[in-house]
Length: 208
Image 1 (cartoon, one colour):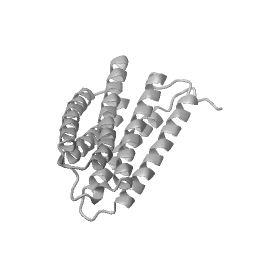
Image 2 (cartoon, helix red, strand yellow):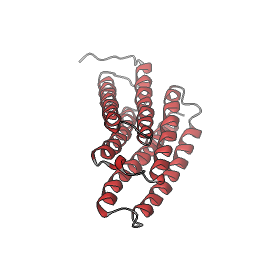
Image 3 (cartoon, helix red, strand yellow):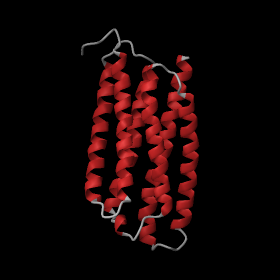
Image 4 (cartoon, one colour):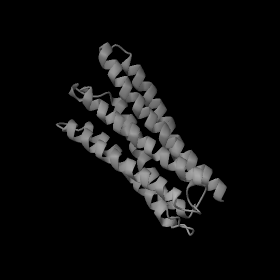
């Protein structure tokens, strides 16, 4: 394997940015599911395509780490940040696919709290995509991780209220089980966004 002794820093930041932009695409697709007359199968398939692209980005990132002698910041932090961005995408795809495979979009409407949770994820995705290019300068990042953590609290609240709704007797037992699995994936995505932000904070502290 050919090693680069002088890091091409731009390549690492570009890969982080591309991965985060895919998260925005993922939350946009989840939002489409709530639209009337949406082709849910198409949305699910496009989510899978975005997830595959994210996997390729992660592979490129790891390959870049392994072929670069001096990385722009701690090698383990690069691995962790890349893996966590990929984890978020995995949860978004799982939620969308389950909504389709379980036929939940055939219900008269999805719970309002589920839409609220997706809205939180969309905000987190956009903040993350905005923050990734700033890793290069390590400036103006504190507001990002503070807001992500605040949104994670909003997501937890929406998730808890969704569980209250699911176990209120409004839905039959099988539907509750299906929707709870989707809710768990959405909540896991929300948590994963916070893990990304916490890792960015750790990197910024180390580099300051």
